[in-house]
Amino acid sequence: MAYIDLRSDTVTQPTPAMRQAMAQAPVGDDVFGDDPSINRLQDRVAEWLGKEAALFVPSGSMSNQIGVRLHCGPGDEFICESGCHIYNYEQGAFAQLSGVVARCVDGDFGVLRPEQIHGLIRPFNDHLVQTRLICLENTHNRGGGRIQPLENVAAICQWARANSLRTHLDGARLFNAVVATGVSAAEWSHHFDTVSVCFSKGLGAPVGSALAGPRDLIQLARRHRKLFGGAMRQGGVLAAAADYALDHHVDRLSEDHANARRLADVIRDIDGLALNPPQVDTNIVIFRLNPTLGPAVDLTTRLKSMGVLMLATGQDLIRAVTHLDVNAEQIDRAGSILRAAVEESRAGHARTPPLETVEW
Ligand code: TLP
Image 1: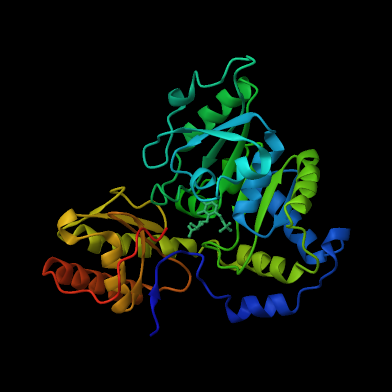
Image 2: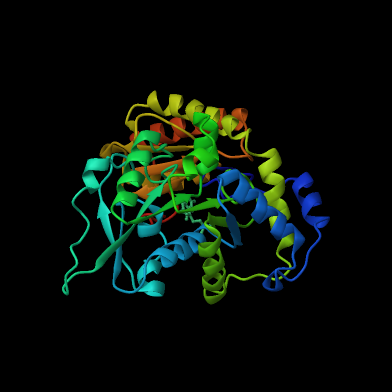
């Protein structure tokens, strides 16, 4: 069955034109710094983000973990929002790889208010870890693609700087925020010491992320990338896809946002579903199920049998993400199927496949 796959914006296929760009990319051994396509991408990303330098890495997780390691060592702590990807979905790599602990603060769908973090810096004391870093995520995945208010970002980072803390942005979906707000990537980024961006989410490249920051830190990041096993050789074929995406797939993110709102309009209208958060800022739609409809995985299983893939991200939460490979017509179809699936659940129709727990 050809599914309408809304599990993530990571599921996109490289377009024929992107594959063409990959096939034609000049390459070299990047461990020697010899890959022209990677070097070009790194320079472009640094420029886009208004930073001195950038480093191409295989994944957003690695980019974040290198970022954490640049700013923190064993026995250090970073402050982050409780639902963020670095804390929840990277296997606690900051602890496993770098001996760092996290201090989580509950946000409002991923958004922290500056005053929530005031007073959280640990005093210098033999008993205590040392607070070194604040990490923010924009857009916020678990917050339903929520855009951080720019004034919060500015105030939090200003406060961090005044208190000698470093700042890192998980900008896996920063370009979604750029397109939705009209605020440039450089404007979002200049508040942070380091910024991670992903090419394999909404931008539709098959692989790759980049970490940008001051030249000396990015030099050090190169060492950490090698340590984490992320130094690639002729990775230019991948960088070329990212480069292509920067040229051709940024502005079109507005289509994904329009499609997400289109789907949200249907969900708003289905009895027993509630958008969570109620507004859709970008390309992620998260909704809560009324308990009478059964667990979220039951509904995603039913949806799958009807040709639509979504993710159960909690007992009663489902996530749908729009992307390059779904158009408005498919979104309409997905909406109708969702409506029908909910009606079947309400009617208590038997579901065939076995129950799992939360999928993600
Ligand atoms: N998010 C993926 C999964 O890991 C859950 C998804 O489908 O949304 N930061 C943020 C905000 C992310 O959403 C992700 C991936 C990452 C970092 C990690 O990127 P990768 O998957 O490249 O390691």
